[in-house]
Length: 397
Ligand code: PLP
View: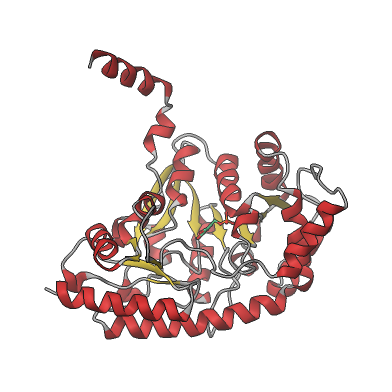
């Protein structure tokens, strides 16, 4: 008994306060429950059910056969940076110099971490929405910053108002972190509202970190790239990636585009912690940018069919669901059951073998909702909806 207590005390001293302050991802924690269960339909983890289009994988395989297995330049293969720059110019009309304003990273995950560590001093505040992607607040805390939440609500389509951001600006505010299309809500911000945020950023001299990993997954509307808004590029760190649009989550490849000074600081940290993004993944990303467009369009059409199906289905079974405009998540309200989101998710998994993610994992405003990823087959979505319908009928208050 004594030994146990001593070990625990010792261990507590070993772990840094920074690491102690963050919690394990609510998504992963929940998915540990799944281990060893059979017959589960997962609407859980946020990744495409597609495998990477073969011609993209093949490019990497061929490069390995040719012995292309070394580190690349810290910033990434020049051709990849050039193609990324060209892509951003053609798609969104933004100009980034591939030599100094673009850094290839290990997914948007690394880019987020680098951005925070490059711009924050201890105690600096970063304003973000609640709910938000699970890594946002933890990245800020790990960089010794302080996440500041702006609640968003279904009745406002989970959009964030510039005035609500401005109301939270203090002398310690350093940045605004936005991610649209949004995980977990699927919300997309109208251009007009983004202009409002741009205005606040300019007025208070704040940096806007814009996570646009779902930029290609918007339905019936064009994506607005934050950096393309007039006069705001100098204040913006644009984050983008290949994971979602090209079904390349496991390759671990993404990028940051930002003013030279910021990219230089991010590159320094990247140099010492990562060195360079995985070489085969960079080669695959080159192929994706060169020839992957038809794949993106095809997958998008398929997600759109699934989106319509799941939203209609959830509403029909009595879980009111806001119509997501982007990404591949539905975020239905579970209030008709009177359960908390964790209770709902655990019971649904145990009783009907359907995995969803409790909304609380994404912040306090996520309570009362669950996230259902519809990047899975229509047949599975249909079966999941049948099981959920039984569940809701049994538990409706
Ligand atoms: N940003 C958002 C909003 C995400 O949903 C995810 C992954 O789910 C990431 C970033 C991380 O993406 P990557 O695979 O590029 O690290």
